[in-house]
Image 1 (tube, one colour):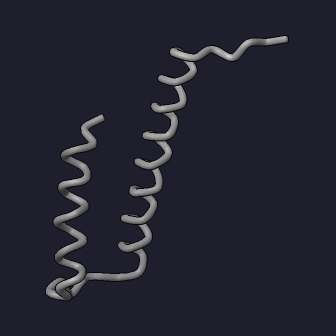
Image 2 (spheres, one colour):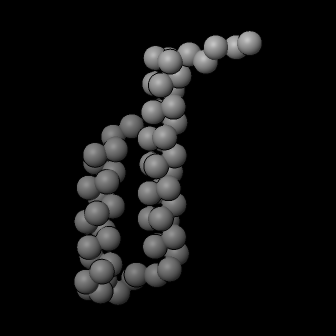
Length: 61
């Protein structure tokens, strides 16, 4: 997954929406951007959890 490219595209699109220069801005588009940001955050958390589980295995009783 190319997170750097995705975040660059999202950041550029967000700036265009903030400036209001885009006549096609809508709440649906903002919802899609928010959904992508949430998905990236979930992927990062899952990657960190997988990494820490591999380094520090839980001791089962």
